[in-house]
Image (tube, rainbow, N blue to C red; front, side):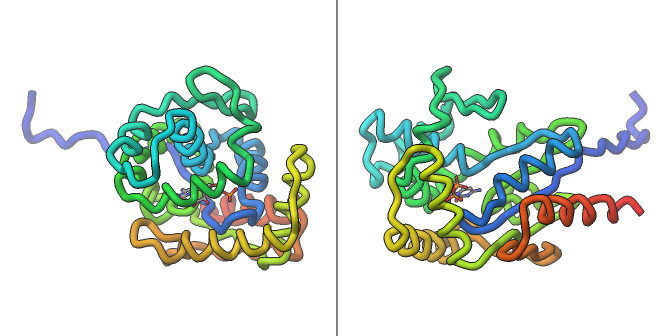
Length: 229
Ligand code: CDP
């Protein structure tokens, strides 16, 4: 082999990173952007929710960091047709409860758990491309993403969206409790030491408080197509 020959440059599939706070609607927008482009979709929050559900099933406490990290590293998660599976069982609905969301947000603070999920998240980067939704997609998981979007909405708009989402799924919900829970979650997501939620340099701000889903999706698609012009 000629040691002077330079290795061919391998270009990785493109990534659109969409980060933002809880209940901002980024999941819905990310799924529709992925569909429009024929890209894969990563719901990174679902992975934290799956770790939360699995830890609850196995009765692992929040302070047992080693067991939680091991659980995350061995997570048997799969996604198909909008459903989420844990060890082959459809848990798409149960991971959406507020209790699991709260637990997910607490164990997402743990650096060891976050580290255990990095490889799994990066494995979603496949041709023809990926739309990745989360808190640290642009900052940690895909820092070389082609497009970085920070998608947010006012606290009130987000609480209302979460309320409707929970009711539609048959869960009970209380607006006052939801608002407080949202503020607590924002605080935890933004103030944690490891991969805090932030609008990184180069990320485009998309405030969806006054936008329909279609308008938000169109804006992301416009930004993405502008990249290649
Ligand atoms: O539905 P919601 O936006 O509240 O949460 P999610 O996206 O399903 O994620 C559940 C929890 O995982 C969040 O409250 C975050 O604290 C955490 N998370 C994270 O830390 N990093 C990510 N990339 C995704 C989610």
